[in-house]
Image 1 (tube, rainbow over the protein chains, first blue to last red):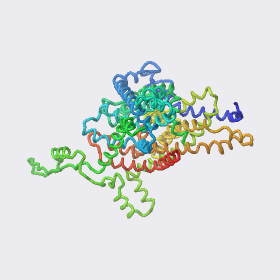
Image 2 (spheres, one colour):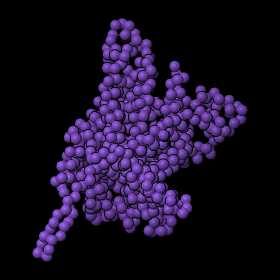
Image 3 (cartoon, rainbow over the protein chains, first blue to last red):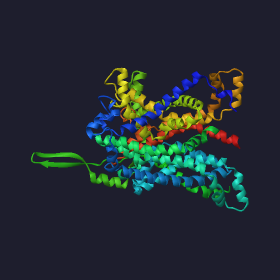
Image 4 (cartoon, rainbow over the protein chains, first blue to last red):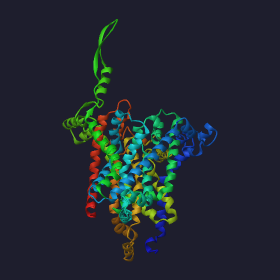
Length: 293
Length: 342
């Protein structure tokens, strides 16, 4: 039914389109600008003389013989060892997503099906854990990890990220499992299945929408993390984000700075593509906890 | 579900959280009670052709040995909490007795590292949140009215600042705001001042960081409001039209009351997330003028040869207390909800 509610005056539509367009520019333009600038040399991207140089690439033409160059990309990936950081990011992201979904689905299923009071306290504890600033946790890790000699390696970071990620995954999957009708697995239990069998054969086939959403958030956490990875990994094992920070920290010669710019583009592009694909799941996840409240 | 089954289902997840979230908090607290061992000094008599001198030197051997015996350092009780870099009781007392006016006292107080960081963290939290809620709401209303086919791409564009990690997001903006970047030179042109730079004064840097915070957090508020807008009941809206309510009146008296609970949720999440602000400070290279509580901890742990575990632990504990205060309303609300559910 097309009601009057959705009828707008011309004036309103005009103001509205203008506003949305302006807001889109604010949120998208910085990324476009950085993408464009990453193909220029530093003298153009940070140009004292005229900001138009970053668009036209005057100095890039002088320095490299063309108006755009992939020099920064080639150098950062080879000389700057960004390939290694990419590998580490892939290893960490894939492991974190797999492990935290495995633990999270089991735990959240149990929480959603148990009727005892302690489930509430567990969920509250998870909420408190979710609110802990990551840096305070890291300050607790460092000393024991040094003593146990497990600092700086990938497996430690993976386990830590899985644990940090658990509270949010549990809450997300808990509210998802609550929407799966109880009768579904109860009937399986009556037919003589154990809880594990009911989970395996009845719940698993229908849980994928929730799992995809939870997986997306785990992925973003692992992929984007800076606090944990920069303090718990040694230089050789750095993932993309701390690596970019390291490029900035080194003594600034013009090449290095553009490494950071090009690496920012290399790191963001895959993320944007994944989000473009899974936008619907991302939004449903963000609102799962909110809208019902 | 029987207790036993529940236990086995929940065990792996619970263990992970207990070991890597619960224990570190205790470990942090334990560290905060200790302080790095002092260096052992020794007197060495040095003789050269012009005579003999006694010098005090660090006894490296003894110091290393002491460090091996007590890797955490010596027990210091709650001493670290009261020292100059944390709650600074002595300095406050001294300032209170010596300063002639309240203004002078606050000036001294806010130059102490901990209070300086607390001031920035709270300013950031409370300056970012209200604009985020308002802008998020307006953008959500606005996106809700556009043609269906354009909605998907528009939403994608709007949520981009939220998806990227804060470090990358702040770097991207920082490069534009740089005096030699596009926005930086535009601002110079606007104010006709070729030396104007947003990095030049602390107020400008704070404003820049807050603007970044708004840019980064608005998409979250937008997404939640947008989803909530889909659930606004249509009947009262139609009734309002029949009664002759204008669009503004409809939004003011029907839509906004419907969104109140959602708004409180956004405010709390926003406050909680911004309380841990760290990456923007690094991204904007603003360490000099803007330190947050998280940044203080990060700074204590950054240097590889001498990490100040005690100091970092104490700041962590104080930060956790801050988070707990912010979190109380959420917990009370969840408790009430849980009570009504059963």
